[in-house]
Image 1 (cartoon, one colour):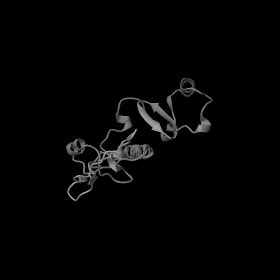
Image 2 (cartoon, one colour):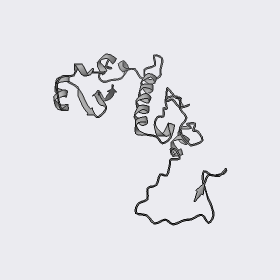
Image 3 (cartoon, one colour):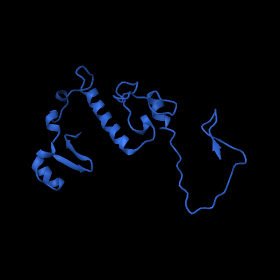
Image 4 (cartoon, helix red, strand yellow):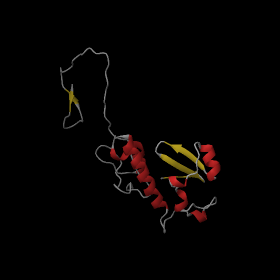
Length: 163
């Protein structure tokens, strides 16, 4: 048997071992946080559980241009939180990269297709042509699309836009 102590998360209690016969054992071992190598190399601040510290709404760490979301930021949680945090972080990164005076290249200075206006990034369900497979929809829209359980993501010019 183990119990929390002041100097370690858990310590063994001497002579507390027991043997129980059973058909099945399920272990819930918990989660101690992400490994430290990335945080140490990038010098990202971490909390006492070694989770990356990042602002609540912007997902930004104390290193400009470095963002954290999901388990590495909040600790072990449900997949729905990871999905939500991933979307929030993607939005924050998009805002960071779209800064008017930022140091990142703008769409017109990068060779390749032009940036897609926001109103063209999303397709409202009512505007979708009647298609029951991705190949037909691609032909009708002239875009690559993929069906996902939680909606559509459009892939154009190597950039992903989600509703």
